[in-house]
Length: 132
Image (tube, rainbow, N blue to C red; front, side, top):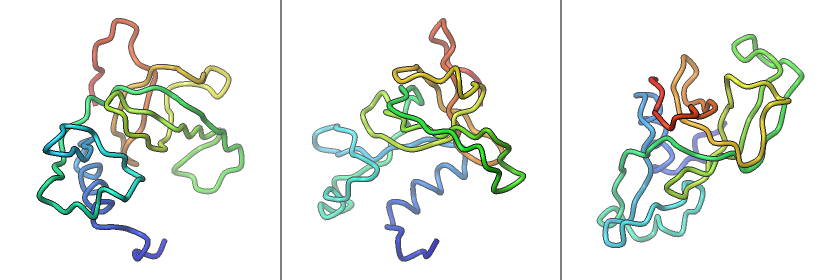
């Protein structure tokens, strides 16, 4: 993808992911988490945006299954989900550790990191965070 499509905040978000950290932009005056794909807050400037660690907890809002292989690094079926983080922002990410038939809208998930980056897996029943 042409890098002109990325905003500096996208680059910062992806740098955190590469470092194994899930961070979200937060408005420093209100404490409100800012949407990762909404860009109106970018005009406010850096003085009121701070990157803070996210809990990694979320819920599946929607999902899709890819059954056609496009690279050996991502075997099919490959499940991607629209995840709403507990803090509010939404992002699209791979779902791992669950078959396509077992994924459900509203399912609780937890962020993890693997060789390819950020991935969400079903949350543990007891509410404990799983290791990376």
